Image 1: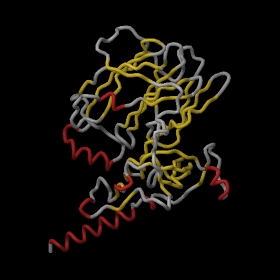
Image 2 (image 1 turned 90 degrees about the vertical axis):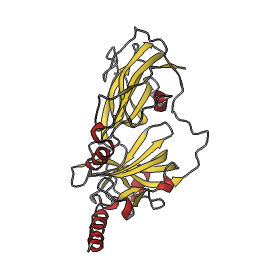
Image 3 (image 1 turned 180 degrees about the vertical axis):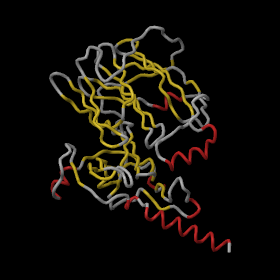
Image 4 (image 1 turned 30 degrees about the vertical axis):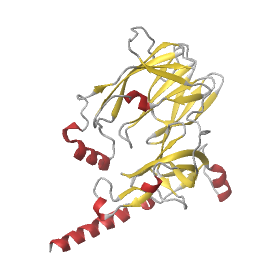
Length: 334
């Protein structure tokens, strides 16, 4: 009798899983190009495709599908749908792997960490199952390629040197907001989907789009002369603490991504994965330092992910009291 009951439970989970498959997460679609124009035919669809080079991180099925990639600049991309005929980045889990957190779906392990040329477009579809309509990023084509040393981790003409500050300077410039200190330049964030924005640099004479940065800035820390701004980004909706810090040159709209692993260098943080930026202080127009600490993961906005984290962490879930302070790290612009 117990075996029969187990069989029917497994059958029920499988049926629910198939109904919740990434391919069935909404069917009403309107194709749009990067300027938000509706695509009306196949020729326009081909012209509307944008491309990036990125490695596959993972797939998660919450209240929506999330295909996560990391591009050559270190920026994370969250795609909501995949129409590629060449690669299946998601896979139906075996009976032993199924639980309420995964909803029966996981990543194709053989593809994780591999690099792809991703052709994508913007589509208008439900943001999540039975949710409101919105614009999301959809993978249309994926081509496997071998990453080589010519693929740089920046679109920038400048670079950063980094070292741990043994003696902290008490003086510095701290200013954050959407406008530069003198008010002549403004950063405008345009929502693309629940986890990412398009960033535009606006001034009296021009509007410039920051290519390749699709994140959600929490705070923008400006240098005193307004030539540089640090975009302090976090994705708590899907990744529950995926941080990215981007240093942007206002004039050229070129940027360099800060290596987040450097902040943890030589420090044992245990199960703590949630990075918090306490402050970013400019020492002068060419150098700044970052004060940060790390705690346990918290609420992500996805019930399935949150339930998994609660099961893993217990009372430590969303606990901001038990933290590890990271060394203050100084960066100098070259």
